[in-house]
Length: 147
Image 1: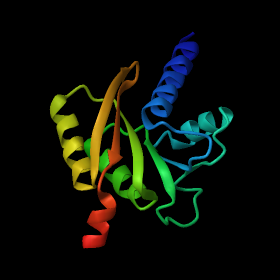
Image 2: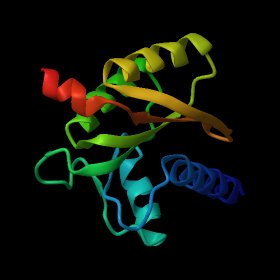
Image 3: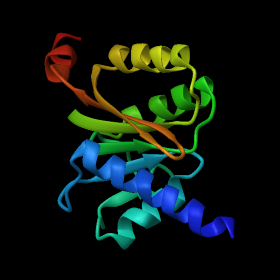
Image 4: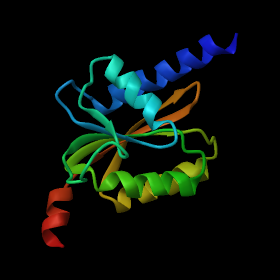
């Protein structure tokens, strides 16, 4: 009987990520993490046919407008997912991260990592599975041109 609860909480996370990143049917979305295949399939069922996982995307060229990270439980896991997803994201990309930890220090470390990558956190929403953070790149084109 726990299956309906887990399906509804998974759907809640998908809805939250779509809303926070303002994902549209025209956007390319890249999904990474241990639950990336499930999240990608959930997006495709909803009509987001331009969603892919890092494993199924051929060449990372910075062509994706939205990045979604799911299924990571440790700081090292989330940092590895951020490093993996960053090469797929455009200079004006949005990102959403599912964080299962309730430790505020954990969130501060993720915030710091996102800021190093040129992202600014816009919102955080509590779900049954944890916290979904959303962030957007602001001024990243200028940072790339300066480098």
